[in-house]
Length: 329
Image (cartoon, rainbow, N blue to C red):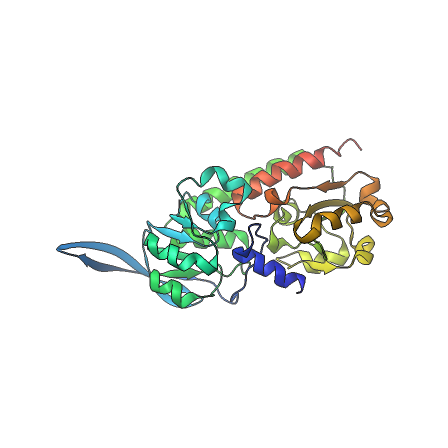
């Protein structure tokens, strides 16, 4: 199986360490109509008026609550928590994200897609959020289901869309402003560390693959490229910038793909940790300029798998500290 297929599969939440992509349509976005309707539901002699509105999604126009109260998300937990929305249920992979763990008390683990339907139905949600159209008909029978194709939009555009359909537009703008302030602070601290013409890259080692990580797939790439403005090697620009999916490369091509500053994660499953050790002890690795200049930083994959604003801010702190450690060189 090719590397990109693996990345897409993992980002759908099938493994506990989510990468940063998921299958599904990515051709169009979602837009809310301004019309608001009053939907009346009856339970016995009681009637409750619930305001709804039409919302245009990649799956067509649907009716959603104006103020959703019982949200279930199989992905995108970080976006919800950023906006101050505590879902009643979330996918296993999302709940395992390192920098979200102190914020998930009371959220039900709905498992992965193969078992999620029954658990979600038992929670009686009023809105379901999905990263792909897989099993859309089954989910939409439980509650209105919004599909946000993973990686189809930029981070800010995506978060603003969440703010729209969740009634949290102001919170979205505040979160983006706070993140921008953090980036500005980091830029000031890092001024002159990575010099003009020097390159930065993010790499991941698997049992059978060596991957240059693209901006759509987490690992702190957004901080380094779009945020701090660093550039990858020329040979990787097309693959990793502007939402690029990354590049699965051979070990032999590493010297021409290696950056002056290298951030490295290891996917340890299936022998990935042994493979990483083999690579990092090889003569080729030790000849890399980044190795010779002590500019290779091995990161904790659990800390760097997610790409929401909560995680990105924490990752930025770590990246800044690591780069500042090289300032005296």
